[in-house]
Length: 314
Ligand code: CP
Ligand code: NVA
Image (cartoon, rainbow, N blue to C red):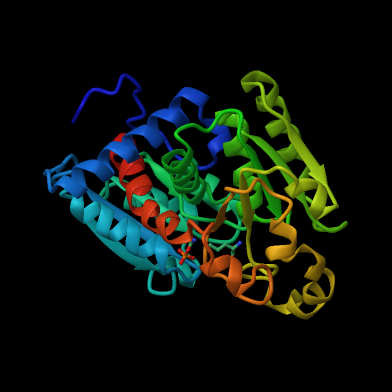
């Protein structure tokens, strides 16, 4: 594999906060180069003979397919492991599962509920563990988002990103970490009671001081969106929060990303959504299908970002 000067072999990816700004930048840059290679049809079998286990305790379209196709394109073998079919589903401990799977596999991507479960898997495994989404964080998604913004703007540092909606979810939390690492100003607007985890906001704020950007936690969506380069939102009720959906639908409508709100952003703003989207709730059809949308590139970039993570860690 090409020498990129940054060594991540053997590392876990549990949270973007664990990575330095240079490491985050190296992953995004490698993702861009792997995308070019794939588009030119150049072989890049960096993971020949390697096997990735993929444990899913929640549904997935993009994460499953991008990791599976990505591993295949890198010359390795992806193995889908439904948590219900593993003995994990019958009570075998995470620690025992980690030690056994480490004897067969070269890495594990896991999507589950508790961040603590992913951390426990990583503690007992001797192979890299990749967080494919927890209730708290979704680092792989944000690497793809940063790649998408960089493709469209040529740079990340100094831009202004506004996240509007549920502040206390995986996407918002990983955006806080990711923006602070790359020096992109971030303003979050969410209703009282749905604001980001205070520790995550504080840690992102500390990183932002180092990279020279700002982290703002607000309640007013207009204030967050004004003069923003990038608008981001996510579902109002995440996976696992189905029982809260009716209550949330009463609180969140002022936080919908629509043409009226987006008119406050820069005229050439980019719209991102990790998908799946609930049109008519957190975002309108007009924005999803409008001239500013980058959501399909963003979804494609999951593949390239995942490949970069796999190539570097495995
Ligand atoms: N954005 C994302 O992670 O999509 P999936 O839930 O389909 O994997
Ligand atoms: N916040 C969403 C993201 C889905 C990719 C969820 O957790 O359901």
